[in-house]
Image (cartoon, rainbow, N blue to C red; front, side, top):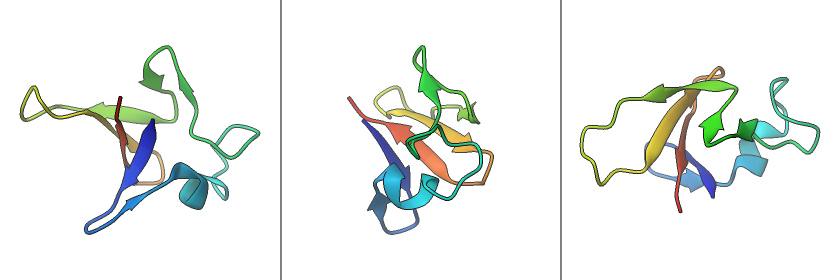
Length: 65
């Protein structure tokens, strides 16, 4: 499951990505092959952290299993 991380909130991608020009046709982040295709991976500080990405719009997105 993908989530958007804000300073003090966790948001569903539908709340943010609907208005993004890089989102897919259903308003979701472009996720495929275990990668966020509309952003770049962020290096983990600890192995226990979920995979995180920074999207082109500047939001931090985490993949939580």
